[in-house]
Length: 201
Image 1 (cartoon, helix red, strand yellow):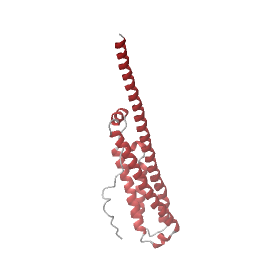
Image 2 (cartoon, rainbow, N blue to C red; image 1 turned 180 degrees about the horizontal axis):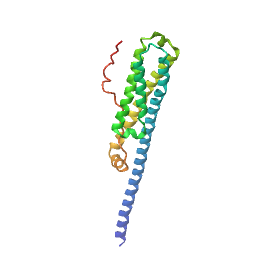
Image 3 (spheres, rainbow, N blue to C red; image 1 turned 120 degrees about the vertical axis):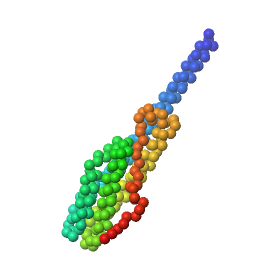
Image 4 (cartoon, rainbow, N blue to C red; image 1 turned 30 degrees about the vertical axis):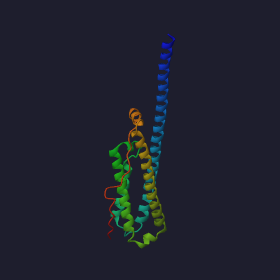
């Protein structure tokens, strides 16, 4: 009788120990995934912040350039329209979970970058504008912002890679699927960006 009771208690003890280990692993896995997901969200916010900085600079840049009557109106209109398109997309942390919305967001940001590039190229024809201190300051800020956007996007992709890898690895992927952790989207180069832009006057 004592031997049977000892075996039963041993089996119960092993089961309890197993459940404790699984419980600790589950809590650690869940907390790790939450931390990584929050890091993705925070890094995404950093990207948004840089895009917002660029959007805030554009009206000042356009107004400065408008002061030069000979300046091509079409270029300014394109920049203004592109900025308006960017403002129509709400960049929420959930955006990184929706591939179509993410691509649309990336496309309008690319259009704005392209319009700004055309603006800067067109400005080369206007020595007085290039010499304007306010314009030079805005140009430096805009170039700095473009660099910050690039750095923020690279950092976001690194954090997204770590998170996406974690939720796909065994055994964490089992828990990630049960708990609803979804893969986030990466920033990718715009189609055709591997080709150097043509500059024509």
